[in-house]
Image (cartoon, rainbow, N blue to C red; front, top):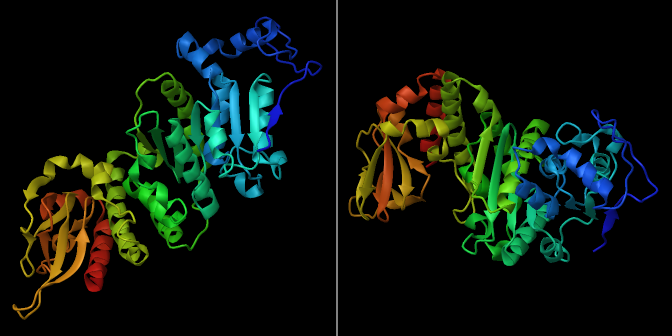
Length: 453
């Protein structure tokens, strides 16, 4: 591994005017009186927001930023401005014009290694920061060494191609083995998802148990993303794009620079709290458009998202592997959660018939725990029914009965002891009442689903 240390020599100089004192700074040795005075001025306005102890921990900790694109690149400048002085950058990419709209990059930096460009930015903020550059990115050869030298890892590595995914998994394996905390970020259109994997706790599983260590050489980007995003409240704007990406019709999902910058805004508090041992949430989701919409509009969007995701799940069946490809669950939808008072919860023992073929039903069901089997009965009662599907937590059935008066086209039987949430037709119609278009699209996709089952 080749490391390039970016430092300021004694004969170099930079001007840092300090408005009140007319202060002129000339770069010198780290921890010299000049350095200490500069650092005090740099962090003066942190007082009251970061304690003295917080400031010391942030200054003395080594933060590894693996992947310096939109997410990773957005973290570095806020950390340096807050007082971080030991940064390790690992990325093998160069900036292109393609990145100008989604990353913190300027036109003069196009064509440069991302690590070099970011190091130069750090230099003009705080020339005393010790920056270690690994322009090979994260590899099998250097992952253990990179992680060993860090106190905290920011995982900004994408998962849109096989090589990047291997690097991400290798990074987490090293962090898990060496008990180092990792903060991962994903920007999806206007929605940001942050996951904290505090591997200092031996009970924390690799990637929260969504990916296994032995899969590092076999899992592909499609399946990885589907598992990671299975619990993510998908932005309505991204549903068609997500489907195209999952089906391999696009290489990179759309991204907004503003979403990545939000990750940078969260980073200082998050990094300081983790380094100082304060408890933090393991999952943080912020959907910017949803935060701006009034509740009436959010209901409309929720209805459209529900309809769209039914269609997406139907078309993605052929690319599911061993039932592990993630599915949209209404349980993860914020507006659906607001309707909790309308839901009835029931526990069914194994073998119980939840829905019987031929009956007229008015309920939609979501499996919360356990498994159910969807069975199609034959006209000949002496024949055993065909098992069409097995559904687990987060998966649903019975939506056709909410929209038409047709009888159930299959039976659903509890395969194990299970907990099921049901939503009546009246409650569901109230849910979608704000959007006639959503109801129409849901009806169309549900009929398509019935035809393909």
